[in-house]
Image 1 (cartoon, rainbow, N blue to C red):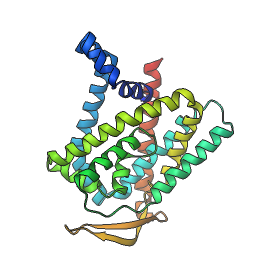
Image 2: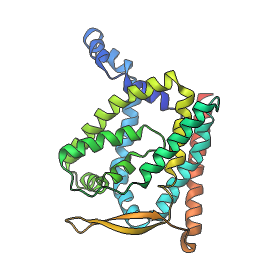
Image 3: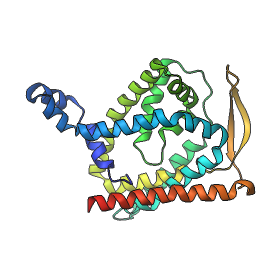
Image 4: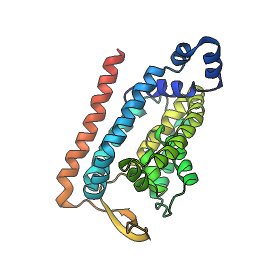
Length: 270
């Protein structure tokens, strides 16, 4: 949304429907490709795929060894996005304020849930992929965080690192299914009540900040996996002096990236 591609993305994804099949049949592949803005989707998918493959190992390492600094970076990304998305709200009336508070409360509650501790099967992975994709196109609710809450983030990252094609394919098919279904619903909401939806999305961002608070402490051991991994219930903690400056720096870096991308998007559209 910050980069200005949110509406075109929803329009392109929601164009993948039965009408596309009729266009392909009657007018050919080229017309069908143009009808869904295929070049845009291909470029975006290539970028996402490259980042997933290229960064999965790095993110896994950072989550294991530099979680505090990584969370500080994401905290900066999200916090600086709130006023930018909030500007899209044309009128802060009762509906908008209510939507904002509801969105903030919902993501706060989701972020407060303990992660599930189960050994996932393929049907469960499919469902997790669908839910994560729905979350991915909602600002403030990270698809990765949903996978973490559902207890499958580590298995999915491990599958990507080890080129487990079956597991990755199951999650991917679930993600595509969720994305195609939810994008049409979200696009309709934005067309009919954009003001309230923008307020809701701003609330999503605000509520997600508590889950991205950099300083955590283990409160209770929830589960020990068969491979020895432990899943803990974590709560937010007061800032620790030894990591304070590093967290401040990485929060500012995250904020600078969002502001910079927003200005580039504004310049490109002008």
